[in-house]
Image 1 (tube, rainbow, N blue to C red):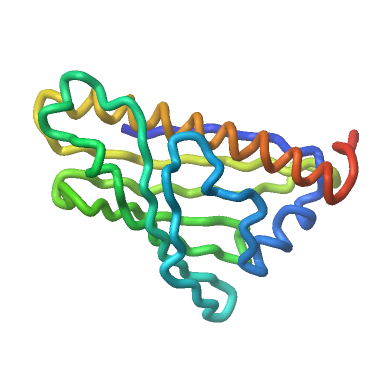
Image 2: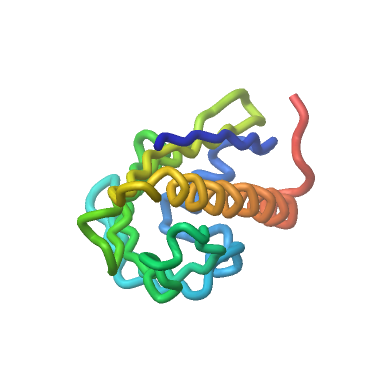
Length: 171
């Protein structure tokens, strides 16, 4: 199942992109909804890219139809990400600890200059759950949680940008 969402930030792109180029997590990611724990396993810069591996433990309501197959302890995974300085993007691959051959998820989060004082972030990806009968229900539930976290990330990012750089700018 594919998904996509956009967020608009009324600050110049360099205000957001420069800390990301330095490898900074502008938003404290462990404060996002549904995140129980987050541990950075490795971070390495190679040229104009930053490669990172992060272990996540998340929680959320598992759809009733999937509760016999998916247990709460199975909601731990590795995220392999690459930040690219040239196109202002993160590409991410999720590697679950459980059901590795049944879950596939890749995302891209790219920042676009939408004007001198406006930056748009497009978050999109594809999630595939290869479990007969329950796949669509589980995909929808996980994507709902991903979107909720991404919306909260945008809200937190706006707050942090305002604290660091003043109120949102108007064109």
